Length: 367
Image (tube, rainbow, N blue to C red; front, side, top):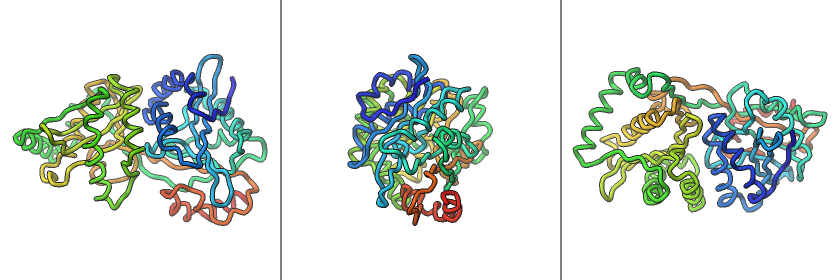
């Protein structure tokens, strides 16, 4: 088994098939290479550098951890997971070999150039041993570990019952609302369409952008803006995954007008809702609600057995989901790091306030 740290997109290309197979095997659609490579090409920060750890056993890719490194305002080198616009990218390890592979990743990180002062791992299941196992791969003293932020991740289980079984378990009010609003939208000439081919997705990207930005603004600006680099990532992924069904754009539309859109990624029988949005002027007919239900139905139709709506506990998500397992961020910090004045400033913005609540714990760990 051999671990290496690669620093450019071209050097990663020979490992893409194995990387993608691992994402499918682990049922982690957000961790597929197409998104990391597109993000590296179009959205890597100007001062960021690619640092992807690839672990191979012979010709097989058995582990992958796509990082990028930046120097913080304190002069520390912080390694972050790639594709922050696709919140939830995880390291991938061949099932059953997590301990040895994670240790190899940690060893490779410790000897990377520049050597990391801080490694930030986001969106791991609460209690995951991966941060600890990665830390054990470092030479002693092992890095300190903190988990500054936890959050629910909404899951839907389709299982043997498929869509019909899931739908039957929703409340009577939920089912009635869906049927009523579906009829009203149909009467207005709208239909549900799922695009999986690159030209069809490209044609609808402006509508997805408009719907998503309207929803983002309505939430007070929460979420990554759908800027040109964001659009380029989606467009490149659409080309690479065209026709596979692993990138699906579901819309509620009629000729010349799209009023709701869901972008869904899929791998290994698990589908994940990435982007969603709707036209507020049609809110009275709940097009986003109808579109989401139909996206779940489409996932079941193509063989997906689980579906998630991403992170965050929102009332609308709870009406859809069967479970909200807790995920967390993890922070590996080189022991003896000085000065370590304000750890919160070392984190991406979304985790800073949460980090403040555990500042005392982090100081104790790195002391």
